[in-house]
Image: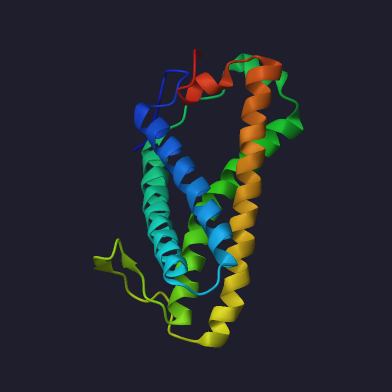
Length: 186
């Protein structure tokens, strides 16, 4: 059973999950880019563990966010915004959201698969050992590694487009779109 939120603003849980996932994605991406070229050291190992922990958290938050979205449908775009948007923008809006949701799962799952194939277990927060996603296979790890990186960069590009579109709506169109996500009036 799904319900549509009648307010023009997203439900409070939707807003909280949105911003929590946004912070986790930006932080994990930044750590991932930074750590990739570090020489082998205890600091690099610590960053890799943090990155893996963040990936598992992102995967968990994404599953929760998707489940919540299936139960609590988002509010419709206000008619004034829909009327002002050309068809290509509406299509880009939907495509960007669908691709981001897909990559919310692809990026951490390929990271988990890479870590498993490379023989590096994931112990979430140093306490909860996760099962290997795939068997240890160095050749497979080498195949998965660029998929993880490319999907992470694709997600980062979509996030930049998403933020850019939101800022355009807020400051150029002045249609108060950010109010739907808890920033300012609707």
